[in-house]
Length: 117
Image 1 (cartoon, rainbow, N blue to C red):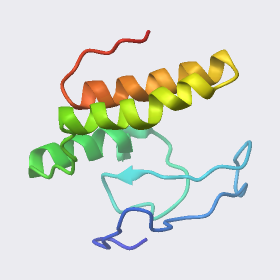
Image 2: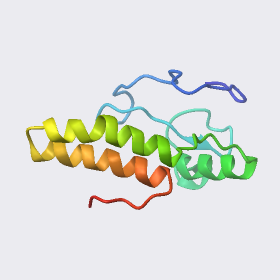
Image 3: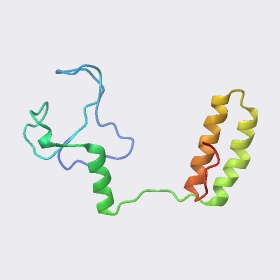
Image 4: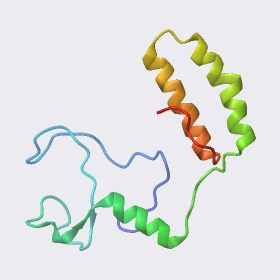
């Protein structure tokens, strides 16, 4: 990656590996406050930022919001037409729990209360 380079969702930004002084295969991803050192280990964490929180704050401040509005009627259609029959046909409790969890995700996204715990 280069400073200022834009990436898109799904774009490959690195490879998993085990180089340097790592203890296992991983993708090292960080956001730095300074350009030096340009790579590798820093003596303290004062020069780096926890990337998840940084990105959440960045996009919140930029006003960028990429959410799909789930309408109540659409959520209920998906639940009734696809998830309820799948739940009835499922053979295991774990499958039924997964289907219930997915139905609740749709319910919450459309402003409804979840029904499964």
